[in-house]
Image (cartoon, rainbow, N blue to C red; front, side):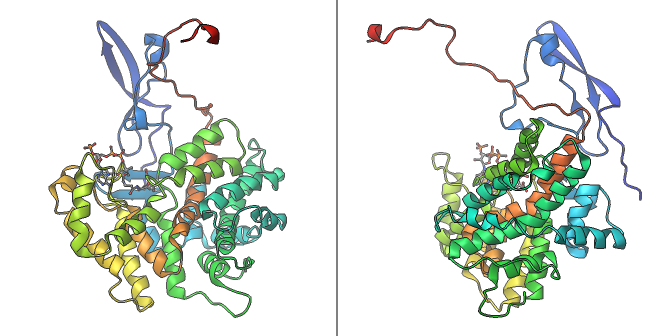
Length: 440
Ligand code: SDX
């Protein structure tokens, strides 16, 4: 079945009418190829003197995009129309990168060329290694990643002219190629081991695992089962529509900031525990619960309005059904633990029991709170040897392709303009200055 590629904001499909008091305001309604229609309220302020008001953007479409589609009620996630389950099962991460960037699955020749181009950019400027020396060894790896990704704009001036399509693609390839190297360097720096250079005859995930876990004193070959699991985890985290960090990248890019600075802004936003930082927080929470018999105490706290505690790894702004990525991550978790001979992992036992309790609890059912992408990933990553402080770094590594694809789409959108939201002002009205001598 050919994918329906219709839908555009150039084609009005209906008229929306807003009535405020005794005044009517008419606005065009547009339909996408799938998903909710949108009401174009761009002229609202000019015609009514009013703004819309939507903190957290729960009902706001910030842009038109052809990259990723989510149906939160059905638990569906499509990258350029392809179901995430099929891409995770049949493809590899660089194929997903090509798909997100170019919009189509690559032919064998295109895939070989893309892999080659990425492999040509895996090294970072040698002076970057001295850049790391400025951090404390115990710095959180995300702090190091935000700093080092932003620093790329100090090294690669020849791909920061965003008006040049060729430089935009080079910057995109550079980001995809160098983010594993910088992520591994952040890890190595935190454990006081020497940096390991990329080896271009390895696949993307094996290369990354080797840069993280190889040491100069012995040979290292990535376990193929773990490398496949790592690659699949990258696919699952690659893009996710207009989430907080992607919206941050788009807003930063709308001012014309260079792509490296925009990706650094995305990393900073992802770090928050309500977003990409939830995988680290979820594992810490499972460790705090420690035993299945303590689950009721924590579920009670999660339901208590006076307690700020939340079940990390549960709930989602869009998914009001099971996050399709969580299902695949649960399967991947079992594969990795089996491969490593880890039986009866206490954290997995708590996670499975917590999921069972929560999915039968009226509070979670009523609020449609299901496990999300961050619930099982931490158990898998810990078993693979990563410290919890590296979990969000791995999320950022994978999401870099989504951020850069969305950034490119925004830059290449002829209707693109700088993002500049307004506000509902409830502060002090105009008043005159009082000299300090007259203040009581
Ligand atoms: C990611 O946007 C994306 O696509 C993000 C992401 C991606 O790939 O980019 O999917 C990655 O960020 C996944 C989410 C990871 N975050 C967590 O696991 C942190 C725990 N979850 C929550 O903080 C929360 O669910 C959010 C932030 C994910 C969503 O928050 P919303 O949509 O703003 O919903 P809300 O905070 O308004 O919650 C609705 C209700 C509230 O109760 P009421 O005020 O209506 O009574 O549900 C409750 C919340 O208190 N609630 C929870 C809960 N999450 C929401 N109660 C207990 N435990 C939770 N985890």
